[in-house]
Amino acid sequence: MSRTAKRWVLAGAAVVVVAIVVAAVVVLRGGGSGEAPAASATSAGDAGDAVTRYLRAWSAGDDAAAAALTDDQAGASAALKAARTSLGAKALTATLTQVKGEMAAIHAKWTLGAGRVWNYDNELRLVHGDAGWKVHFAPSAIHPEFGPGDRFAIRGASAGPAVTDRDGKTLMTWEADGPRAVDPAFAPLVLPGIGRLAAGSGESWSVVLVDAANKVTTLYREGKGQPKALGTSLSSTAQAAAQAAVDTAGAPAMLVAIQPSTGDILAVAQSADVTSGNALTGLYAPGSTFKIATAAAVLEAGAANAGTVLPCPGTVRIGQRTIPNDDEFSLPSLPLHSAFAHSCNTTFAQLASGLPPDALAKAASQFGLNADFEIPGITTEAGKVVPSANAAEQVESAIGQGRVQASPFGLALMAATVAAGKPVTPELVRDRGTSVSTGYDAPPAAVLSALRSMMREVVTGGTATGLAGSGTVSGKTGTAQFGDGSQANGWFAGYRGDLAFSVLLIGANSSKPAVSASGAFLRRL
Image (cartoon, rainbow, N blue to C red; front, side, top):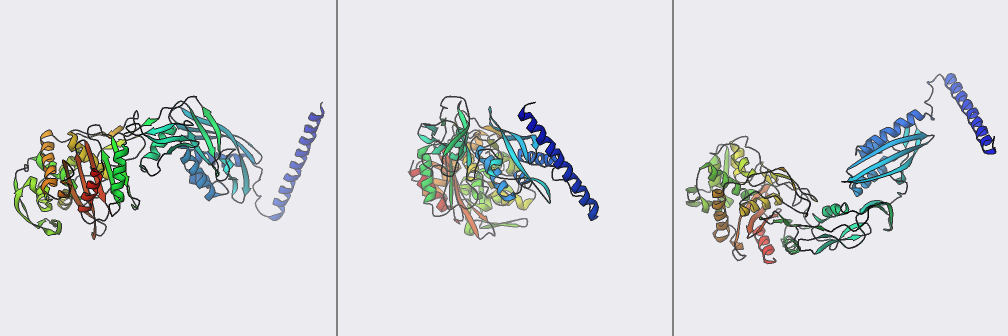
């Protein structure tokens, strides 16, 4: 027998002796105290169960539950979540390999996107206390090289353009820790998501560790070659014009622009003083911009045509609901197209009261407000319009109040549908097509033709004459109360040529500032 083997035999014998002594002490103490014997702190089965529960929660994405099984719940919860987010992980499978004493060997398998899988082995230290076994949490529990202040990043390449606009202008370049915006102020609601797509594109990719001093360590690399830059639908000119318009609007402002012929998203902008919601997903009462849908419902039902002469009193009582015009203005009886141009609430409320309960919801759907899209790089919410539950809801919905909701993105889509004369599918990243979860069909051609004429009159002789000098603009203004009704948002949604857009000013109390911001946007194009 070798010396080494003899030492192992002696060591093993010593361990057996120690184990016998410890067991004897436990038994003697348990029998002499009159108390139930304490659970053995060396139970590998209990330790394995604790680690398994931790790994199961971590794998399921329940970082809070996983953290609760560690000795540093707050630190673990934040670190586990940050690691998952920075990797943009689609899935994680963490499994227990072996428990030996106070150490557990594990295997982690991260799925980071199509065809991208990162595997590695790690060890977790275990601690035992009154509550039983727990995982000792340190950054190295996430990855053996992970330390305090570190973060993961996915790299797709090391140099050159990562993302470009519609004209090939570079918007993001490859840096050590992945795509980085050339101008951090450019499209901040959109560009980060596109950057994450770029990080996951191409033949060559790697997982890197970035420390607090921005030192980069490559943890894993796969493939070779420089990935092709992602092209986008964004227009640098339109985005700059949109951002300047919202920054000088005088109130928290948002603007979304879409090309009707292609569905290309040209610009998404909002001012820094917007404190809640955003231009792509924030849902708000659309006010009288929704009369585009109400007019379509009226025309389709045959309740009136564009030339039908109708009353426009200052207020009207319908059931238990009194509907006023803005500042209770009144006009002599006038054609429907003029009532639309002057935004007569009372006219449209009376017309809507005679429509079926689902008429407005169906009309809204024809403009995409109930559509749902999966657009790579961003999350969007167009709106929500449901059938009216009663007469009061019906008349409120007719003027874009009550339960009717739309986002600036949704109203830009509505305007694009009128301009295009067909359903519009929004697109953002070239070669990464939009998936239509809930599609829609546009209104009949005759209805859209009438709407185009009515929306043009809004600018030539209605509530948006401030845009008369901005080219051939068509659209609809809107003012919508919110909260306790003491404040209102201002809207404009419309189009000029192959450009559709919507503007929202939070708390502007009038549509006029939205019209002014629209003019500022169009003048810069």
